[in-house]
Length: 321
Ligand SMILES: Cc1cc2nc3c(=O)[nH]c(=O)nc-3n(C[C@H](O)[C@H](O)[C@H](O)COP(=O)(O)O)c2cc1C
Image (cartoon, rainbow, N blue to C red; front, side, top):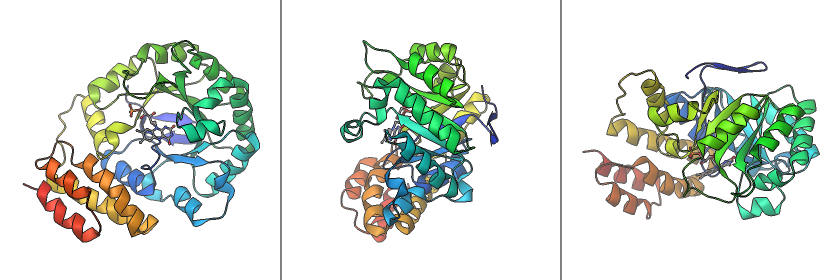
């Protein structure tokens, strides 16, 4: 189960991966996740392959990356193979250790651009994107797919085969089809079918939050596990999963450590995005970090009226007993 992974020259110390999370997994999120949970790989928010080529402060913040994050995969979205190739070079210059192609995003705006899960309707296009990336960069290239398009069309196996034949080094599979959000539990049996059919290693994704759920995912035969929602507001969840997979007792961080992490998250965001955006993101992060905490309800209520760092510092006292 727990093991190092190697894709081309990229060596990962372990096979747990932090999922790409739009609106969250910018550099501060990844930095804290690495330091407090130590996954083998962290992944950026999805970055537009076209927009990455624009010189603008907005793109700078998507491309920001620091050494303390460890190994970082940059996830690109789009539908033009040439734009992916150019964006991959920009990502590499920004410090990317791997390039991932988003083939799973169900958001309307992304699908309307022919990208995200829309790509799974056109497997040969996914093949062309991977081929162009393969030719453009020596970095490992991966695709992140759904198990299929719909209940009627589980074409994840076909997409995985096309991506592998085009030169993908590994494939990450989210165990839901593109027409569903999160109500249905992850379909582990469909991930297992893709593992069995794909000629390259598969990373399993969906509903992993602790040692038991990670074990269930590894039973699909996947070589690694990606975790999304469970690490939002809990950057230490990867440490918990590793300890539980080793059969060790895991002690949750103290309340003081949790509140310190949230405050540091805010400070890093403010440096990267400016106060206003940092405040907006911290309102959501506050609710996530305080899950299960004493006075969490009152704290979340305060988050709705968060306007400054001083407000945050004051509200954090509520969480400490
Ligand atoms: C807020 C949010 C943002 C997401 N953003 C992305 C993204 O940018 N790219 C992507 O491939 N998947 C994205 N996903 C999907 C996750 O990476 C992951 O596949 C999904 O949450 C299932 O894993 P989980 O059950 O561990 O959360 C997002 C999910 C959430 C909840």
